[in-house]
Length: 383
Image (cartoon, rainbow, N blue to C red):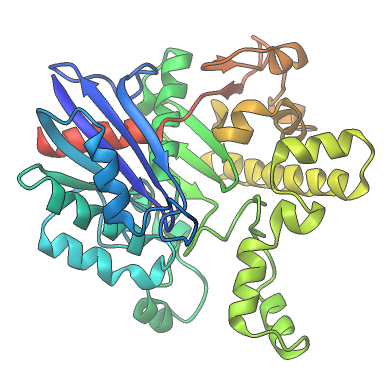
């Protein structure tokens, strides 16, 4: 039996999950891993009473409550691996330095990820630490899919490249989709739609990422809870030159005051759907903009893949919002993409197919489990 602790350190939060993995391992697509303990610590570094002063205090408190005897390894979620990391890495001083060098590409995420690794190394000396990167799954993108059409020398100098994110989610969900269909993942072409407060689409060809909607940062692509997704870059220049907005304010606007919250005042899809049901025009428009963007990516990735076997919805919105699933794929029946209303609306949990049995493209709902993916990748490094 191997025991693996998975840590996901955000700027002001810590999520952890402790797994037991049987001898001989478990298929990462297994939907029922053995979870020994899990939890979340929030408000780290905030001035509220009782809030941990830093990640060291939060992690020390969490570890004091966990049964860590016989711990095999610790797996850490690291958001940005740049072009440096194509796979999970056993942490040493050189790996830590490389992650630190990537902070300019993920200034909100990598510093917190680094803090978690450093604290865990100090609290658990001798226990292997493994960094698992959100971007690594997308390192299989072709140059044509990952290159922006800007001056090549400038792009090379400043690391401007399509990196993609949510890689651990797209990886496990694409494998679970193949398992649901009873086919080897190498034979299945899937479009995975990770729809949460953050959202991204991924074209997966035989288990390999060949296209993804997020780019240099998690801002590009689909409409999200607070992020704009795709927009004309000239909007940034216009706001700076004409409206006089400083760049930091524009950054704040596009990342925290756009998307659903910018269009309708709420970033929770459940609240937005409730407002839409009452006839709220802003909520209705936000819903249409959200679904239209997804539909556009589905069409583009279908063209890129050439053959499509499945479209899979996952994450909080994807797994729990039938209206979004139906709206995002509306009108695509000529492409063999149909959502069965009864199956879509059924109060079911777990992996399932929501398209009619005769549909050439299976439409699926598959729960994601990024922590389990991190655990299995961690064991793959230290085994």
